Length: 226
Image 1 (cartoon, helix red, strand yellow):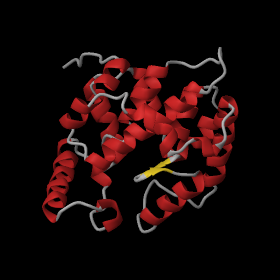
Image 2 (cartoon, one colour):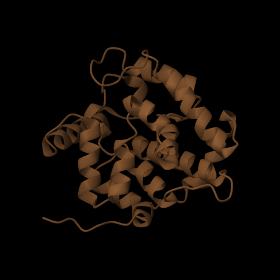
Image 3 (cartoon, rainbow, N blue to C red):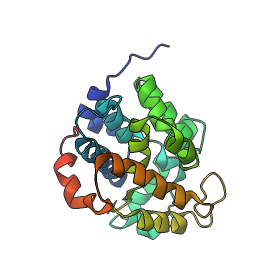
Image 4 (cartoon, rainbow, N blue to C red):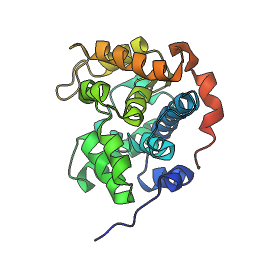
């Protein structure tokens, strides 16, 4: 069955409905919106005339980039579930199992791709989402695609509870994934690559790392549909 295409601007305006459709937990919704806000803040600081292939595509990709994350959620990590009742946690555990069964995968990135494709996101948005993996950073750095660089870097500046420095982000990732085998590795030079990407992106926008904070993102957060 052919899926009707969904414009990137519509993804942003209807993101609340999209999150409801896929049963996205509240904290994850805020996280994706915050990452999108980082992307927009960087774009707003780019010099006039600098080539960027689609602001709306960047925003749409960042609003969707973790749609399938629930399939990898660790329900034993209490720091990730502050404020949730036992009943709520059981509900989200059920959602995790349901999503993994429906998309026949516990690979969060694959599930995200399938969800975004199901929405009818454009090939460009799907490409941006697929390129944001940590193991792709070297290729992102070497590419000429500024939008992809912004997407990848934006996600590296937001932890589950808010905007953080690169160092804080990687400390959090190492803690949360310390005992998990698989795709993610944070001690193999990936932090140095993240710093290199940061220099590229913030250099293009004439920004300092400290310019990105929860305070500077607040004005953007209300732009995305509820």
